[in-house]
Length: 260
Image 1: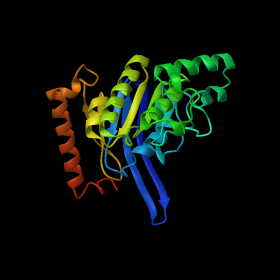
Image 2: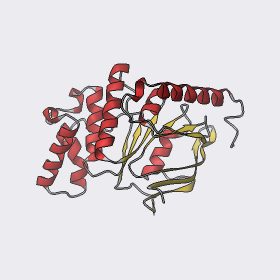
Image 3: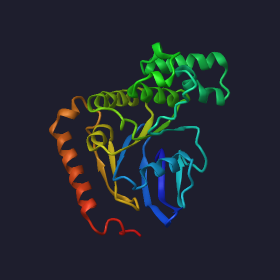
Image 4: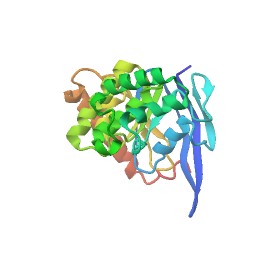
């Protein structure tokens, strides 16, 4: 049994124009401590899938199980970081990190200890009393991760976490995400539009079709996280293969109706 099982997920929802078939028969698994990247065109249901996995949105059909237990409500062991990070602007960095601990009833001394540890982990100890508006994009991303990890998250879901950053900062933050995942041992699923980011961060890369989103391929990427991977021929080969795969599916006139 895998750590996370996503089984035959379909999602339909209503819009002004009628019914939208967003996800079609999506199935995959994630092992304990594994890093998985999901990539595909805009509007193919990737963000909705993360919300289903977290228990925030019910699927039309199919199931999600975590450690053998069905996920049908927000799960304590799963954290979701959205594109805007979801930080509370009226709370300091320290209080943003501590909010989930407070909700879950941790004692004040333990909350303070965990907050300090998490801020140190993401190198934001000196910003504990600052507010989100005083942080750069990279700092906000690190703060969101610190808040997620404070409650011993076993599965971290990230929806385009680096999309707002410039190219050089984005690469540095990819390195930081990799280091945090390696040191903390949680499983993670990263939704991204960046081919290079998917190859750099995903031990497996799940490729989605245009809407209705279904899995085109699952690519094994065993050299992910190896030293100097970004500069290797294997990295560039994976990037090119993924680019061709996405291009072929986008050019396929049947891709949007294949599973309708």
